[in-house]
Length: 353
Image 1 (spheres, one colour):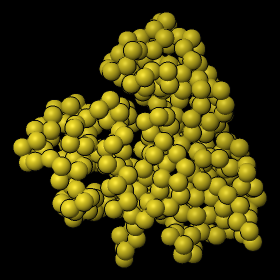
Image 2 (cartoon, one colour; image 1 turned 135 degrees about the horizontal axis):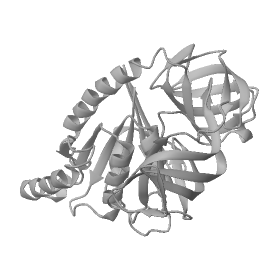
Image 3 (cartoon, helix red, strand yellow; image 1 turned 60 degrees about the vertical axis):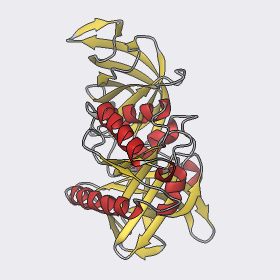
């Protein structure tokens, strides 16, 4: 079981590649593709609303175990560069750079572009990613790509096993009502194992509910481990109360006022007190205001690119999170590079559940 974010700019070939890797499913600002054969189960997420909005990109990355960064023969554009910055800020380590439309290029140009990619990625968390050339027309490189995905799948599966005994957590990405069944949500188990009849809570609405049934790829199951893509029938909550980004858990922190230990991207304009920006965490997002910045315990009004600092943000609405979640601060008004900083939770984590 592996979830793959397939990303890149417009014209990168990502949607064509996704369609070759799985069967098209739900389509909103992200498009889901599924593949299941024997023990191999793939969920592919194409942020189809990107680059017009950064939200689909952040959603796809938050849902994924690994990333396919698609680059066409013409090379990297501003959107691909923004994707690399997002990958680096989130600390994503598992992925592949895919040179798409290889049939429209030649070995010399492919190697020339690969050398450029390696130089651009050398100081990021993607520095060790394989670079592979594929064509969805001639199927050149497709089997090799699938084999590499399988190898990464084995690595991520072992990482999911390490969370098996931890409290369960499910990130919800779709919710709807089904006649005769009631409230149904789709999501991914990101930690622990869920069981039929588990009594948990949906955050940040703090609604207690029960899991009536669990499905994995339309098959009823009694439980689902970390890494599983699931459909859950819920008792005790209405589908209209549940939004993308809500979290099923035994306990989450919830707050609209937090302090983050931030790394400011070296490609950003920096941060300043009073700025109205946007924050992404797991599948949630909200406008925020920067209400304070400190460096080495001293209050400052601004910090430059590449800085490390403590950032106090006031969020427009209460969000749910846990200590391991990475917050991404962005400026939606920037035309090219919208991601400013990545932060981990610090002192003002708000009240618990």
